[in-house]
Amino acid sequence: NLVSLKGDTLLFRERIIKTETRPAWDTIVFHPAIREVWTVKDVTDIASQGSIDGNLYIYTNTAGVVCALDADSGKTLWKYRTGNKIFSAPFITPQLVIVSSCDGCVYALNRQDGSMRWKYDTGYPIVACPTVADDTVYIGSSNGKFYSINPADGTVNWICEGLKGYIESRPATDRERVYIGTWGAMFYAIDRKTGKKVWEFDTRRGRYFSPGACWPVVLPYTANGGKQQEQVIVLSSDYFVRAFQPSTGEILWASDEAKGRESLGFSPDGKTMYIKGIKNNITAADISKGVYTPLWNTAMPYENNFIPTRMETTEQYVFIPTEFGVVHAVRTDGSGISWQWKVAHSAVTSLKNAGERRLIVMTMDGTVTCLKY
Image 1 (tube, rainbow, N blue to C red):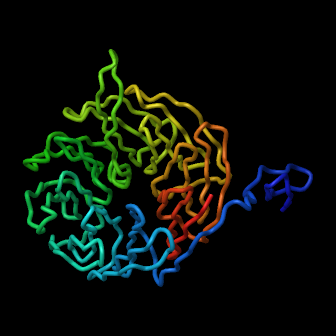
Image 2 (cartoon, one colour; image 1 turned 90 degrees about the vertical axis):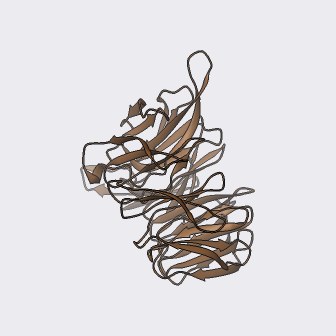
Image 3 (tube, rainbow, N blue to C red; image 1 turned 45 degrees about the vertical axis):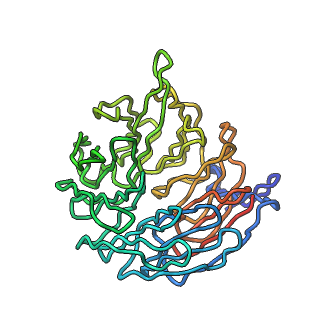
């Protein structure tokens, strides 16, 4: 191995004697301006993504505990223990924290002190992430069911049954429908008022090629003639990112060019999409006109990166999670990597923008760190 310092970058390269010096297999960039504001070390693993609202940061762990931190200081505000492991991301509302657990229950906790307001028992373990829209909780389960729940008291509005495969991700909504993918290679649109399936899409390639881990999004685009329309976007583990017409399920565009599996990111204005490829690439594409138009592709200093964690974005950076504990900040203008920081030796499970050039990073080994960049 050759270790050399070039400017502010330490490069590690392998030399095959009398044959070749291979490209760098790892790099470390020194940035004195980047620092850890605070770090919390949980006693167990963290397998879910966190949530932030103002100065309230909520995460869950595999001991079944919901943890609330002050995003400014890292101080623990409160904890609540459920009856089993938690693999889902919580959802924060002005009054509540909604979270699901492998004990089969959906919980509504008081945002201020973590006390339980209500819980609804589905009778089956849940790894799916809830979302709240227009005073309604939407969440899938592992038993082929999808639920609409009243957040005021935990009563059920409707249950949509017969979905193929278990649900892991967080649903997206528009005014009329809720959208969710499953690990049965299916993607569904469900009527928000009645709970009836509006349309469905099958990748026809089996469960290992499912839109099951990616959180779908609903974004506007400008159609021909300047009319504003909406598109439902999801990335499947068959490497295809697809955009659907919301009311009919018609595919507006699809691409497997970037070779991503689950991890997407979007610019703050929703016009640019970022795809983390499974190998050493990050791809940006313009989706503002209802078509997929590649903008740039940045090569990354690793051979592959399968972690399904969502990317986080600002106007200046797209933050890339890795399965080896490093966060990369890629410039959104396509000019490459600005900086990288190693948080731990295990996979990055969550990235959250905390404002004022701060990023909260979580890793599988229970490390929660706030970086100032």
